[in-house]
Length: 64
Image (cartoon, rainbow, N blue to C red; front, top):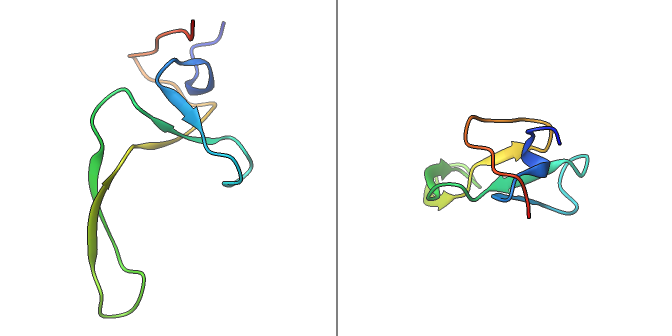
């Protein structure tokens, strides 16, 4: 099995996002991020890292 995000036990695909190959990595805690939905606004939150299913990292664990 290829050591890619889509085959990792910590990865969950997100339906309807991009080309269907996008997902979130649940290996570690969510990361902080900022976004501006409108001019002169700033929101701060956390989110799981977004990855492409074809990417890989050194912490891959095969889905059981």
